[in-house]
Length: 471
Image (tube, rainbow, N blue to C red):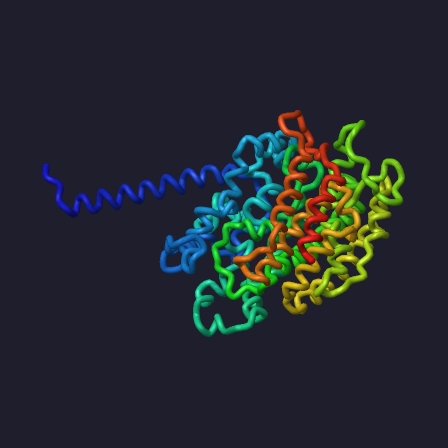
């Protein structure tokens, strides 16, 4: 029997419908087996990644980061688009098994269904993750547009109109669109997952189960991030500014997380305290003989090193040329955290107070004028000097020092000329980086990923060369 054109049209349509139904059916069966999560349905503001994926909007398939191809860049290059998929990998399965969290039926929670994992790997809002209707929102989308840009319902159909584009960032924020043109807002968006908060806490239990330790540094992440946008007329000191703002935002997020941990422990005996994720890993996970003997100041035997990642560079930043000064003093909080069992109430109060001071410091930094080449050269000299507190004596602090120097170096080069970076400084930076990488043994059984080969004395030569080149 000869098939008519109409038959073939209906045949093709039927195949497409069947494929779509099968896809949604498979996804539905997987999602239906998900644990009962808090929430009553899709929050009215969340629209889902699919609403951005039209070729007429952000899916033009142009070059990476080009206007109109934001979704194309995200889906092809951005690790956030694969954030949910990694929960099915062996490492994630091993973490879930070691963590041994149970659902309400007493069964082991796999990583791809555990709210603790989904809060960072999908969406922080349990109402979004727990919705029974996911035509617009799917866990498989990973970390999509709205966790960073804001819930889209109130601006989705207007954000491209001329009258909307002319509005102030504050006015746009009133309808839920975050001002990601602001470096501070960008850093705050990143820090929520990559540093943590009350809803997303990578604590020592999770790290001990095999989750990577969170070592977030905004400027480095930002420089290496596969961007789905183009910066519009960035300041010459952009890299150094991103570093300074990122340091303060991350430190503030870390203090707020500490405040939450202390408060939660004081009201819930099941919450771990002290929270070992607050401390330098190598303070416990190190060889009992050999290795470096850093000068750690007035500490008693057995005192743990607190805050060596997020707070190491604040003393140097407080004196940085061209920026606002600060008298932030974390000494009392550090002293509290050294105790075997820190007082939760006092720690919470102190962390809250210092967080407010960091907020005021951030406000001043946002208003600070751009730094010129001379100021950035001086910043390199200051950072490479001996004014960074704990930075030169721990691997954490020294790595933060290197990242700060790298940002200042790039800002310095941009302020001079993009085609003429300072001679010799790049090799000194590379030598500093190489020494930090050598701190981790290769080919050994380095179970705890501890920088047992770290020698602060080996950093002095490249730091001296940087000081020399920055004069």
